[in-house]
Length: 115
Image 1 (tube, rainbow, N blue to C red):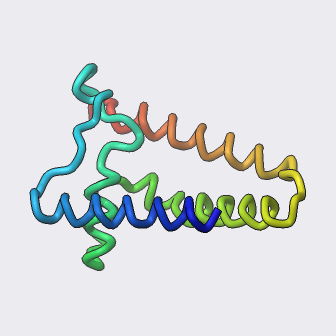
Image 2 (tube, rainbow, N blue to C red):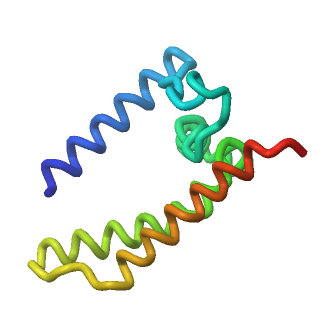
């Protein structure tokens, strides 16, 4: 698990470095195909803003992920602890993931509604 986490951290930092140097991130395939913003659109800009300490910029890029980052991190830590301990996930964890997915889907619909 530590090797996987180290690999993900290395991949993320390499992507952040490349994005900082090139000024562009990966394009959103959903946006390219539909012209609509997906719930994850802006996550790269949000992460880069957070690395700079620009909280307002992070919020502007993707407010839903900004709000849900802490609960998502807590769920991932719970899962990692249970994995190491060899215990199964609790029912509430699965329900929490469903709530997060539902909130992200609702955000994805709402951000594309004309105002």
